[in-house]
Length: 328
Image (cartoon, rainbow, N blue to C red; front, side, top):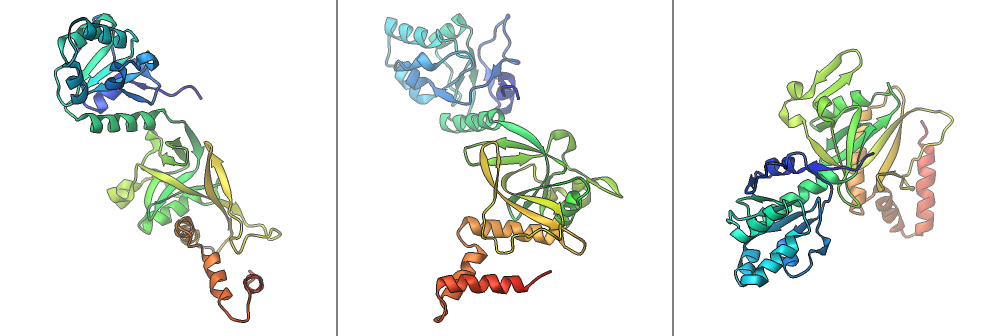
């Protein structure tokens, strides 16, 4: 996977900035930005500009304007020349401030683009940082359906023909939200968080064997679609194997690693007569309870341990015996 980038032109259009400097021999439209850090001009004016360079973006606002107004003559020229000589890619001037002539002069000297925005510095930096993080964090595409169940993002995987799309369709019919079918684009936005979405060309569509491709938004309405969702767990469908012993107590927490992030994982055996949509729905709700320390197994052990003639150890054994009696 090549290095991710976003063009400066896309940033300007997305954040509704407007150009202040224009160059005949240089266009900002296709300039690639691959650094997700946003710099404040204030720190650079104080002599910390050594980290700047091509591909970097800088924001300036009211505080920097007030600081520059206190500098005069050669001192101001030396400071600005030192900053812009790093040839960073662009300077965004916030709060509809008209940059002073010296800023424009040194920006043009080193071919640095200057843009204006009506937003305040804090709001603009937040939007710019979010945009950069969203576009520059690692992204992969995996063969999986993705639904949002009561706000829990659930990836659904399994062999072709096992019933993933049909389960997604049933979940949508039950009022949950559809994100993607068959292919899910997964983006890492922090060390612990993954976000899933549908590749643009298959958004809103789902393939159901025997029917064909259907448009979820047209069938169930705009509220049945969600463009993206945090990935909270992965559910894998596998064909039932009568010779295999499946987990019945949920003692072992299982995880699968995606882009370096551990995602809770459950494997659901598929056989005739099972309502898989309900099982996935319950798995999603149970996963949410586990995250806040309310797992059903721990709660049951706690209840049994309160019985006077059972120690916690015996309580655990009792649950095991009770569970083994309930055989399929």
